[in-house]
Image (cartoon, rainbow, N blue to C red):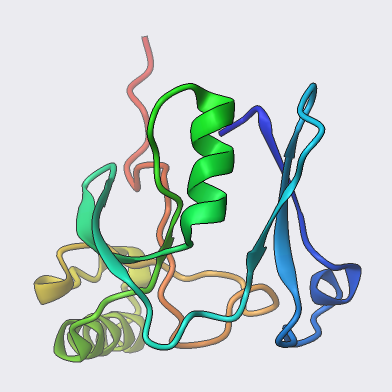
Length: 147
């Protein structure tokens, strides 16, 4: 995906809420066509099984147009899906409760095991992520060993 360029309407980057016609634009060097992926989620969304790193679950399919564009560009059949967060409210609530308890105990969110959610949580900058939002990190919580 590093060869695929993405862009959003400038107002959204400044914090505006997405409107019904707003879209994520996908483009690539050497490809004349672009594809617009609507930011409004289809109602109901078409769910597909997905796996990214250690996470696996259901994700919303972003449609045939995005799939055809990416398939053509990448040269292999692919689908673009949207992470919907935990579809299990109890797991999300358990993770939020454990993280809040860890913060209250002075352990920091990095020490909170999300239990049913099967992930670790840590404090994030509220300027970028509202309280209670589900986020994930690609980097490990523990430092990399030095040689």
